[in-house]
Length: 98
Image (cartoon, rainbow, N blue to C red; front, top):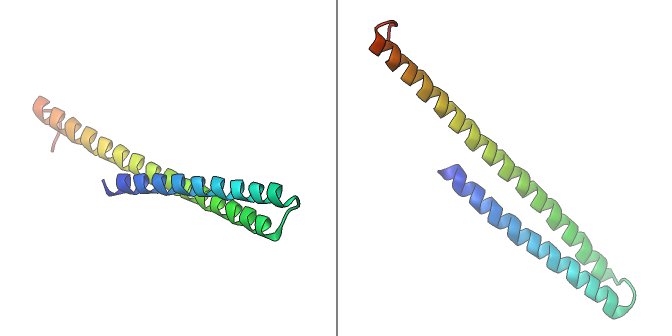
């Protein structure tokens, strides 16, 4: 459950970062259109927006990693369950040793 909670938190962080990047780009474009030329503040905002987008992509990769970890755990649990039920079936049939 802890990893599922971590995925939800990462998803929320990614949404917030994406919204922040969109706002930063919009403010940069507004500054550009308001002043008429590209001021230094606009460049700074765009650079910050690119950094936020890169962090958001890193968060997305973290989400993918957590999901694969969850899937791997489910697969291992499924294999354990199947081997356990196979042993029980063999025991019921009297064919194998357990």
